Image (tube, helix red, strand yellow):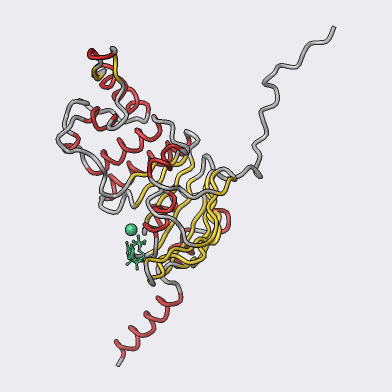
Length: 277
Ligand SMILES: Nc1ncnc2c1ncn2[C@@H]1O[C@H](COP(=O)(O)OP(=O)(O)O)[C@@H](O)[C@H]1O
Ligand SMILES: [Mg+2]
């Protein structure tokens, strides 16, 4: 008699060649005759964090506006799971599993946390004229989902405006995970935060990654990027100044490139000279 192999003896091999969730290839975008992006490429894979780094005006927001359906690219290709795409609006992006958390979070400050969690996607119970919001369920689910991400809010009835900036970012991340996003796009989630709160937000970025989402993290802080990033794209005045996988670059080099590398060396020479004169 032969014993059948247990079905789970060999895990499904992870196919490294599988199409990325999102792939931008030599994408350009012009606002009139302002070149906001030119020839920019980016790959986002499930369970990975792709970081987009660059100074103010580098084109970071423009890049994510293309991914989130707010703007359309003028040249290059945009693929979602291998299929060439042109998103017509943010709803379209959301339907394809792309959730975006903007820096100025679209929350209603005076509404309770649970209400914001479900904003625009409220479950109802009853039918016809008896149809009403299922408040009990929304409260319970919000509490559960936040706890699952390790966020223990004393009271989900408190107005979301009473939460700190970091906590609000975390609620937005938990919301995207709950509603089944495949790709989570975060525009400078730590820019306005102190060290401690930035750390908390980055922890939830890692949690979303571990839940299998592909994350696009926009930041101008190489330290934050390097804490969670698998891939790094550097933008400079709308063009790609670098694209690296984590194994190819260390934090020091990433910081150097971000700071303008040779430009900084030159500046330090000039400053030395100025001092000795
Ligand atoms: N709606 C717009 N109309 C005209 N120019 C724009 C618009 N949005 C951005 N830009 C320009 O495109 C460039 C890139 O901007 P942006 O993507 O916001 O950069 P970042 O987010 O990296 O600071 C900048 O020069 C900016 O002034
Ligand atoms: Mg921006």
